[in-house]
Length: 629
Image 1 (cartoon, rainbow, N blue to C red):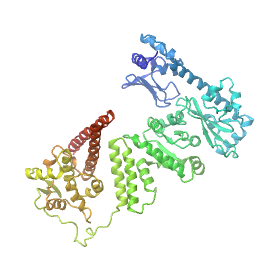
Image 2 (cartoon, rainbow, N blue to C red):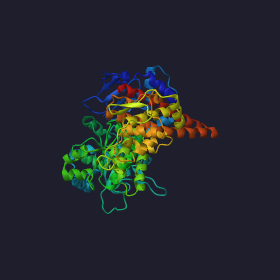
Image 3 (tube, helix red, strand yellow):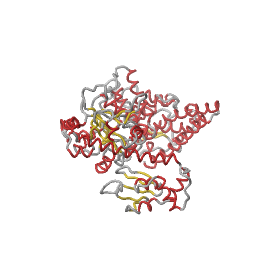
Image 4 (tube, helix red, strand yellow):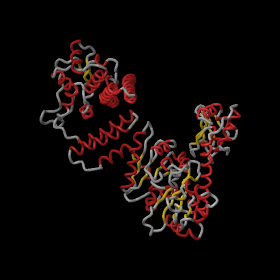
């Protein structure tokens, strides 16, 4: 029996580049080898072989596999013949084969033959007298003969048994398994596709694995307009993108991949000269399809219809992409004019208008903000709070910590600007209070002003530090709190920007509350005024001893305002995140102590690891920012 362990050993004994190099000219490129893909025609090399990882991959057509897959797909051997040949070269004895694996491989090969025969029959039908209605419909779409041939249009005639008769050399059970015939209880099987314009759905290597059919008769109102093959051993609709084998090489040239709603949109775009288009198949864009797109381009463009259904589909794709986001990988979204699909836009305004529309694609975060903002009326405080809750729920879905932090900051800024629009300040007008806050030396504070900024004195008395520890509870988080407090005093314009995030963070140093109270007053905040408020309320101005070891760049007097604002925002994100993490860890620990279960222990260890990573991230950021400043 061929166990996974034995097959892994076989793969490790085979040098993949030597095996492939017998029939394909490979060129060394760093730790890999490159070549023009042997599975499809291309002029520039997109085929790579990696001996360390033991696989080959083509970024053009998607061909991918190991040594065994190479022997079956390129050399045309059966699975067992490939294993025997490789084992002989590696000096290994072949154990008795697994009959189930061999049978599954043989079944897949046979089903490919069935699908190829069905495609040939559909194409033949299109040019026959029975295909007149299908040809007339294609005439209304304006597709030229080259497009029709390239995409393999065909026709499925009426008649419940037509395919069975045409493909009689294949057993009916095989036609059913391929999704071409439907089997129901107490009734004879019948053809799935009848009276429809047919399009083949192909895999990354251009082999037919399924079909899509558009109904032609307007009288058939009880049948779906578009009908796709069901999932089969060859076809998984959630893991297949229509036209990927043609779009991938085009995307390598243009650097762009466009996702449209349906296969007829793909054909229309290709006919207009935009060949790097793919489409999902009857489902919303799945996580697997997003990952497939990212293998070819970092920023795929979603171009869904301008109606409500199209925008809902785009939003579903956005929400599915959020947990998968990673650096430099995201989505861009195009909103077509309401009521138009890509084919309509091209017919009415031309291919140039479509190119301009694609060029105006918006970022994922911009679409996320606009969709949630416009989802319902925002007339009451409760409505606005609901908007914020929805936005933060999306942020919580993002797994990458840095991207989640940046999304949180960006969406909070947009929300604050929307919910709390700036008002004209009476202090800036010179009325009421007689101008801006007066700069006065804080009474009892330790420090002085240099270049208009409050510089805390490096030394703090034991008594002041003891009062601070009693007020804040001590610990690493208090060192971060002290650093952020000093940063906000040094850069007072940042207080209002972060007021909302700090206000909803539990257990903060009480000095933050006093600074946030200053936001309620109109006028520009100044460092000396903030320091005075702390001292007058019996609290110390943060000194360097409190945040020893956390030398953030925003505490450096030479740091520019923009860089300081960015560094301070990152530190506040950590400050806000810590209590949530601590509470979750405490809850998990209590659960483990009460249950003593493996699941509770694993949960506790996971959160403990996150806490250690948090502390490491904090110190790395502080060290990096201080060094860069």
